[in-house]
Length: 425
Image 1 (tube, rainbow, N blue to C red):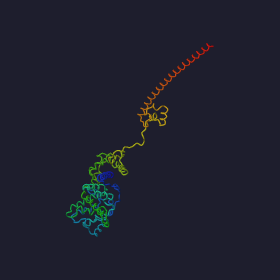
Image 2: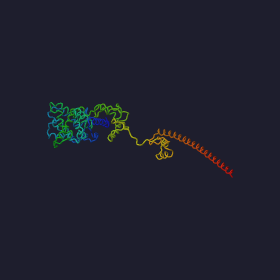
Image 3: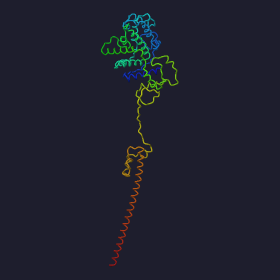
Image 4: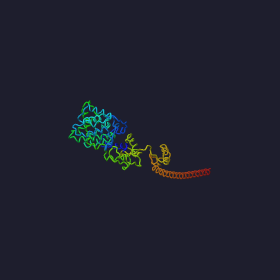
């Protein structure tokens, strides 16, 4: 697998540890693939990446010193107190000087002296082989309620280790398991081995630290971590199938595109010899996705440009930034202002218009119905005005007729009076 593809597998493990066991891992991808200049002579006090490596079947590239020491000690697994008993300080110092000068001196050394060299090697690494950013996670895994959960979480945490550390630990813990299987002869079971190697692998305590209850509790948890790693050495770095099934979806591709021949994270020749597909490189597909994961974990329904999906999230319904508006025609025809509505009510008469016309919140449908009401009201108004006009004209004619009759009567009366006066005179 490529580097970015392995990082996605690690991401699946990190998410599972957090969701199932509540174990949070910070900076899990920090300096996972840092380059260190190769040191060809010195052995002690040099980073794992700077040491000469040799390929070991089923384990990948392992530091040559670790492979040589373990191969040498495999012939002396019956030595009682191996790793518990100390060798000669003078002989160990001499062996160390020879090894730093590139001499091959392990084949003639005593087993206890060689075992002492191995403990010094892990203790003097610049960075503990069980990396510092995983210490709290390893210790928290020992607080889980059941032994099965503690073992499962501890083994899964090994999958998050850098490649060089993981290959070294897989090989070394497999060797320690072989030692523990001969405990009837050497008196060194996995529990005893874990007590001895925990301070060297975690880089904790230099002998001068005051022993308190919290310190003792921490040392016991560290020993429990190492014991579980020894007892389950064959499972270290192996990602469970149910997690590997999630990787294609996280990569945004079909399951057939991502089909590693092994569920382990170590490099193998089989992966490098796979034929290249015409499809887009998986490393390119997840490049943007990993950067996006670091900056933000908020799920949205925005499509990923690289097709990578890290979690199944409920789509977020976005709220529009602008208010909905009526169609332009309806707004221009029926969108009266409040001042205009008051003016219309005052001038034309409120009782002649429906209330729907002056509603504050209207829709195109209600505007059209209001327009119909306006047309019917306008027709009623015209008929009412015409009826009133006809009534007024009839009244005027009747009044004119009465006035005319009254005027004729008065004229006749005046003529009659003048006639009587003329007769008397």
